[in-house]
Structure formats: structure tokens, C-alpha cells
Amino acid sequence: MSALTYYLGIDLGTSAVKCILVDNHGAVKAGRSVEYPLFQPQPGWAEQEPEDWWNGTAVCIRALLNESGVNGNQIAGIGLSGQMHGSVFLDRRLRPIRPALLWCDQRTEAECRWIEQTIGRDELSRLTGNRALTGFTAPKAVWLRNHEPEHYKRTAHLMLPKDYVRLKLTGAFGMDLADASGTLLLNVAERRWSSELLQRLDLPEEWLPPLYESNEVAGYVQPDAAEATGLVPGIPVVAGGGDQACGAVGVGAVQSGIASVALGTSGVVFVHDDTYQADSECRLHTFCHGVPGKWHRMGVMLSAGGSFQWWKNHFACEELEQAKAEGRDVYEYLTALAETAPPGSEGLLFMPYLTGERTPYADAKARGGFIGLNLRHSKAHLTRTILEGITFGLRDSMELIKASGIEIRQLRVNGGGARSRFWRQMIADIFGLPVVTVNSTDGPAYGAALMAASGVLGRDIPSLCGEWIDIEDLIEPDASSSQRYDAYYKIYRSLYGTLKQTMHQLTNLAARP
Ligand SMILES: Nc1ncnc2c1ncn2[C@@H]1O[C@H](COP(=O)(O)OP(=O)(O)O)[C@@H](O)[C@H]1O
Ligand SMILES: O=C(CO)[C@@H](O)[C@H](O)COP(=O)(O)O
Image 1 (cartoon, rainbow, N blue to C red):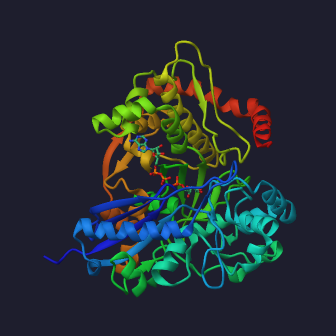
Image 2 (image 1 turned 30 degrees about the horizontal axis):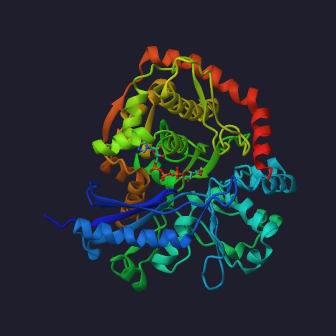
């Protein structure tokens, strides 16, 4: 029997970096994660230090190798996945100029308006397939020029979060097409940088790295990185992808009809496209897929798991203590509590716009709220309605997908929230579709490892998905809950329009010193 080799998948998440080792039959051997801080120097801002990402990744890989007993020389390839859209500005000596602005940073409303006015919405859509949204990278570069001209002048390179880790690992510049799509600087249809847009925005094309398909080798581990991580020099590192493309590959959403639903800090509904199909009003994002030569569309909520995390952090002290005492995960404790309330939470709704929203409203000033509270409502109802509100928000994206003529027959969930069977049943009921989990629960990291194997072995991604990925659990929707949820969803949908002005007034008031 031939010896096992391994593929290392690295997912540079928002809360932590997660590293896994996958053997050449697709089985996960071991996993490890290391957290790092997120800074919010002003309301609506979200930043991280690129050095924290690299240090966390090095510590994580070293611990993973030690704990698993796998040697660096047993690793045949590495794939990188990461939080998308974040802007890493480096000087000529490759030093970060300032903390990176993240995907959930909302400071660039004025820059987005300027880009859309300068280029024109239709023309921007023709050039990039998308519209200017606060989380995307191009408005961040324009913000730097407007607000920190000294930093802008010193900038020599602009890259995405995981591509900084690539630079530290391999000494090479590179970016995959899936993640590059979220910069708003890519001609998504033609899979190349949009020189025309860069010129019109007066942003230097030489800042940007070379582009790769996700399974192409983009560099090799260098001796100094090997020393820092416990890897050995020379291991090939494939381009990888943004976390959504990697997550979709990691659950096998690589053909029409199967959607990936990601429940991380953000919440995403992602569908595969064989050909380039821009959304006419750009309400969905149209990006390159991690499958070479393919595309995808997706809707993105900014605070999906993030809303649940907020609830846990601020309002679940007792549950946190009880969970600790019983050695249970606090989220398991909270979902068990939510399960004691009925579907619809007895007339309660939650708006999950805690950090503004992207799909379907593209509104940095949207805010969250509970509506329908009465004296019968307990913490169980509030906990349940948070999960329901997040899932209604995801359904908003699915409705846009369905309206564009795409038929979905199965949802494959990934991300932290996918651990909860209760939440998966709720998704099945609210979407009216079967919900599947697969053998790996590490969506993006697993997808990155699979991309590495694809590149190293010269195998195509869909066929490797067919070999490595099995359905582990399938939940069918419950007809009576679905019917009840439909009635609640109709009201949920009307809330944003009804309350938009109030949300904006409150956001403006809160911004005053
Ligand atoms: N057991 C669980 N049940 C329900 N939700 C969970 C559970 N564990 C984690 N979560 C949710 O998943 C989120 C984290 O997901 P993850 O994919 O790790 O995020 P990220 O990649 O953004 O760092 C948490 O904020 C929480 O909302
Ligand atoms: O902005 C997007 C996708 O467009 C997010 O998906 C980020 O890529 C990070 O998400 P998490 O994995 O941290 O939830």
C-alpha cells in the first residue's frame, strides 16, 4: 500500500485562521485554529493587522504538524482560502503600511458613490459584472487616496488577505480569479484585470499581482517560511480562492442546481454558473468560480453568524457559564434553548442588519431590531427569532437567485452555523428545499486542500469533488413549518422598506460625537 501524502488547507477567516490536513483519499486527518483580534477604531470600521494573520498562520501550521505527527515532507501541496475583499497595502519593501480594511468595513459609502458617478452604473457593470459596494476593495483604495494621502503615496502593492499569507509563505505575488472578482477591479467576464477601469479610477495596475485559476501553482514554500511553520521548503502552493469559492468547492457546489449556503460571520447563498451571467441590476455578485473557466453568483449578508455571535457575547452570560460548567459549546446550549420556542417565535421577527447589509439592500446604514415583542416572549423566543431572521435574510438572496431563472434542488451548508442540526432543519423549512451536510465540515479549508490536490495531481476539481465528497446528512423540509414560515417571511420582507428611514435616522444620530 502506498504511503499517505497530505494536502494542507489554510482558511484565513475573520475570527481565526483554520488549518486542516487532508490525505490523498480526501479524509481529514487533523485540524487546528488560531484566533486573532479585529479592531473597530470607529463605528462601522473593521480592521486587522496583516502580521497577526501571518503569525497566527505560522503558529497554527506548527501546532497542527506537532499534534498530528505529520512531517512537513509528507505534504504534497498547500491551498489558501480567505476572507474576501480586504485591502492589504504594502510599501516597496513589502511592509504593511496600515492595518487592512476588511470585507465588513463600511467607511467607503462616499467612495462607492463617486465610483458609480464617475463610471456610471451600467458601464461599471459592463466592465466588472458588479456594482460598487462598501466592502469591495477598489473603494478602499480610493478611500486611502482621499483620507490618507501619505499612505497612498507609499503604497507599492495592493493584495487580498490570504495573498499576504501567500507572499510570506512563498515570496511570490499572486491572486486567484475568484477572490480577485471581489476587488471590483477585475473584468469578471474575461478573467483579467480591467485596465480600462483602473485607468478611469486613476489606480495603478502595477499595484496588482498576477492572476491564476484556483488550482494553478502560484509559488513554493521558501526556507524562512519553512522555518517559521515547520513545513519544508519547495512545497507547491496553489492559488486557492476567496472563502466562498473554496467553501463551495469544499461541499461540492460545482454544478448547476446545487447551492452552497455559508453560515460564517457573514451568510452567503452561492450558485454555480457554467457561463458568465451578470445579474442585470447587480443585486447579486457575479464572480469567477474556483472551478477554472466557470463563474458563480451569490448574495451576501453581512451579519449572519455575526448576529448570533453578538447575542451570545452580550446576552448569554448565564448560558455561557452553564455551558462552561457542563463542558458544552455555548452555541449548542443556545440552539437547544431556541428549540423550546415554536416556529415563528410566537409573533416575533428579527432584522439582522447589525453592520448594515449587502444583499438584497446594499445599505451601510441599515440596522437591526426585534419587532413584535410581547410579555410572553422569553430569551428562548428571542434566541429563536435571531436564527429565523438570519435565515429569512438568506432567503432574500435565494429569491433573487430564483427570480433570475436559476433552479436549485439542494442546499449544501458549511461554516460554523452548519454544526447545528436544528438550524439546518430551519433552513430546509424556510427555503422549502433539502439541506445537506457533507463528510467535511471545514468547507473553505477543505476546498483549499482539494484545490491543492487538483493542481498537484493534474485532476479537475469537479471529478475530485465527486471522489472526495460524500453526503453525510440530508434534511427534508417539514411542510407545516414551511407554511408557517412563509407567512412570517412575507412580513419580514416588508420591514426593511417600512423602517429604512428610521434606521438611517438612528445611524446618523449615533454617528454624532
Ligand atoms: N454549534 C453552533 N451552532 C450554531 N451556530 C454556530 C455554532 N458554532 C458556531 N456557530 C456560528 O458560526 C459562526 C462562526 O462561523 P465560522 O465559519 O467559524 O466564521 P468565520 O469564518 O467568519 O470566522 C459563529 O459566529 C456562530 O454564529
Ligand atoms: O464578504 C464576503 C463575501 O463576499 C464574506 O464571505 C467574507 O469573505 C468573509 O466571510 P466569513 O467567512 O468571515 O463569514
